Length: 132
Image (cartoon, rainbow, N blue to C red):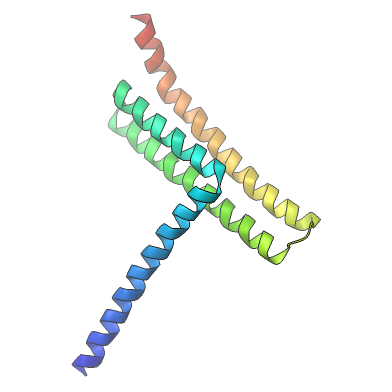
């Protein structure tokens, strides 16, 4: 009985390790294949750099981290949706176009509001820097 239980635990650990591996592969695949994902990552790096330079507060960092997660996750969902639509509908179709456009639109909305919140956080800091 103990041997069986150990085998189950090892199998579960292997499945868990594999699920992390597949998830990381998916993130890298999106990064390699999607220009917008690379743009979001560059913006993420620039916001981190600006946060360090302007010494943003703990709560401002939390807001930025939440926004990073939302934007990147929405881009990953968009990539997944577009990939599935392309698989099941390899030819042009009105409904497939709507699905892909709505998915891309969702990312645009999230990115727009993340940028707006970023401006709310960083513009006052920039103004105080140049105002002396």
